[in-house]
Image (cartoon, rainbow, N blue to C red; front, top):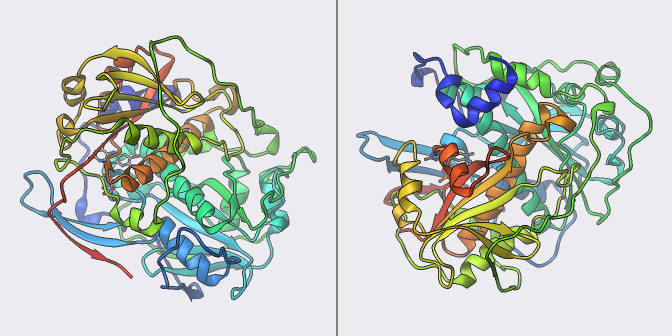
Length: 510
Ligand SMILES: Cc1cc2nc3c(=O)[nH]c(=O)nc-3n(C[C@H](O)[C@H](O)[C@H](O)COP(=O)(O)O)c2cc1C
């Protein structure tokens, strides 16, 4: 299978991306977190509740602890019943969602803060602590790895989001590739939201010299690879540079620094090969900054159609920790209740206000869009709509109650869409920036969609509703419903609505 076929099948024919006789070896499942052996460790603060407003302290070891715990800490242990399975489902949950609750990403930080030696650390989610990988200043190395587009000297640190392929490959086989980008995006969305709460400026770099960053973190690219770099600063303009200081290769940077020898534990004894993921990862890499594409934010194109303009609202104020704690993905517990136009409008506006392209590509011709099917929403006739974020309006595409179509498009009927008033689809172009970014465009598109997922889920939770991201739906059916005709495609489906309390045992960790 070539890479284009692989990407096509990931969306339209997922049986083709798994061997027919593939069986999950649950006995040999990996841990959902990486445990390093023999690293010097630094415990993090357990003073965790994050106040939404008030004094914004300078970053310190204590604030970084709160930040990381909200971003990717293990926050809850739960035990529940899954459909008609006789076994109890046990989950170590985090504030971000993740396909199958497997959390294939890992978080690393480069920090220059009070109370901690400058250096590069792994965030050990299992123990809520840092493991030191390299001590020293890496400002110049990172500035170069980002192609001289951000002056890391002006930042107090940077967060690295990586993907550890085996962590969800063991269950999803090659379908894992689609989940890995979306999961990383949800985590990035959470990190950006946290940045705002802490008063830090942040910016997402999707483009960098992958092998140079992997080398800095000591990653073996066939096991784990960098997906995004997010510098953090106290200054509003933290030093975006125009790049253009000449080309530089990953190899040249790698030669500046010795290799890092590390040892870690992930529990699985028999780790299978994932040849298509390895090939995709290699094809997506940038080995020199000449490959980078500039930020080319585009104008929104006005489209024809019956339009409903939604009212404007003030920004939603909420206690971040409480809203994160409340968030979970309802399934059979959705319970139909009429949604007011105000609620829908606030939900969409929260996302629109956050549509600011805080990343090194802007929307670069690959604008991620929101489409949705609504039922039982006040003053919005039932039907399928496109959301126009610049006009904050809904453009009608197809009228009627579409719940039966949506329900029949589900691959597993674990979510009752009859009880759901809002069913959103995040949509992107089918060519996913291939012309400008080659195969890297695909995973960037998935990450951008993931960032939007997290904003939607936080806003829904703040409005006392729940949202459930789903890939188990028929993409071709949804594309036909919206009339995409092969140009755009639904990347993920997110039903949103009120729900009953779930019958589960849940314990808060820390
Ligand atoms: C990218 C992505 C895809 C997902 N796809 C599905 C899906 O197809 N079916 C499903 O039931 N849940 C799906 N989920 C929901 C996860 O299973 C859920 O987030 C995870 O079990 C953690 O639970 P929580 O969201 O309640 O914290 C998906 C989540 C993400 C982030």
